[in-house]
Amino acid sequence: MSTHGTPAAGAGKAKVLNIFGDLITPMVRGADVEGRYAVMEAITPPQGGPPLHRHAREDEWFVVLEGEFVFEVDGERIPLAAGGTILAQKGTAHTFQNVGAAPGRMIVIVRPAGLDSFFEELAGATWGMGEPDLSVVIPIFEKFGLEFLGPPLAVRAPSV
Image 1 (cartoon, helix red, strand yellow):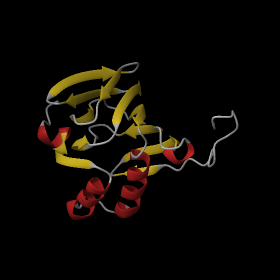
Image 2 (spheres, helix red, strand yellow):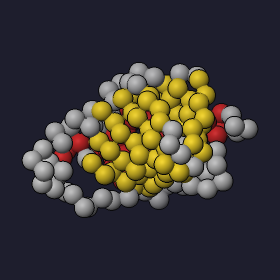
Image 3 (cartoon, one colour):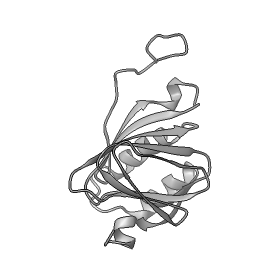
């Protein structure tokens, strides 16, 4: 919605982005709310999750709707299930893994916006790529103020 109660530009046109098996659907794009925030739905397959990373600009708030996850924020492991929430503030090293047997679903809110554009560019650049090519991925991370710190939790600690 816009600030005047009418549908925002682009409303109803959500496109599902495939980021190496994670499905990200932008629900509120930063471009529609003057860059103040973005809201996305994320569906993560079993054992899936992003690489360890750090944001220079955005706070990232996760709300688990379905599934079982383990989050890691600055080295601390936090298990979360449906109804759980966690905030990864800008500057923290963080990642998560779906440790359940079924896909997990979350709402992800970022402030300010920016990750919505990051995911769109990353999805476009890696479309059809089986395994992540770091020579493609890392420059996109850097362009959007993200620091790639290491592999996903499933690779670093597969017994989670």
